[in-house]
Image (cartoon, rainbow, N blue to C red; front, side):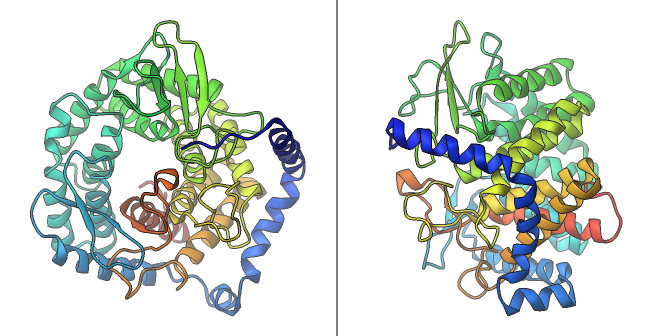
Length: 425
């Protein structure tokens, strides 16, 4: 599934990236201006102000439709394929199962009504068994922290905290001290040289489960494992220009790096959009939890290479080197993850650069809120045009639940920012 480049193309790409980084500061300024030139619709938004509440009201209406469609308990809406109106539902075990209850918690945070609280609680509690048994893979962080984590943040429910701590303990069973990272896929996956140790960039997102748990009654080892994972990933998962591999395969005994591959991207030498967004969000979060300036500096570096290569509307193609650009599918999910992360990262960076990050985040959310990206009457999801696993032909130009989750998270954060509140409160 992974295409290989010849040496000439590889050298051209490295030269191009070097030039890109050298021009980054100027491109960031241009990127902040580009959003103003899209069309009359965006000019109107700029003059009248971006109505965040209107977009959150839209999300409430769409989610209400989905609630009425779910056929039975213990299944979760995951994907609506292009041109279709019906959700594909998945069981508790699916890696995306936590995004739907997490979305409901954000809607409850906005609406503050018993209806949304009850719905969020219902779908969250279906996930309880995940915190009580060995994990299928690293995604227990996504599954449990997006659901129980948001629920505990908003309600303080003791059962939620116990589920979070239980999931953290389960996640640590995948940690390999010889390597210094958490195993992502404990099974045979093509090109991963099983039974060697594989770690995917997505795994950075699951460190929040460990870091939060370490500070809230969990074991001290949770923090040390998370930091070890972040450090090892920082050392081995990135190219010289700070673009990331999707996967690094390590020797499970010696810990030596065997290879870096891009399982869901165009090739091993290209920047897969959502993978880079996981890095942006992940290292921003690790800085928040540790206050180590090394992570803040690194978060900026992985952000800047992403921003410097965005198209004019700030929504990335599924891979930054997809051969059919500008006709390649976009990935709204990567844009949503990045927008939410930039609102937080900008607050840490501060100054002119921090303000640019937040300004670009708002422009990303504006574009995602346009008729070009919102689902509207086409289906009951929030967004169109996400890409899941292009090389496998899966979820291409689709509506996907994690795009909706990070979109509504970004809107909630932006609302708080505009109201002068802590965006993580």
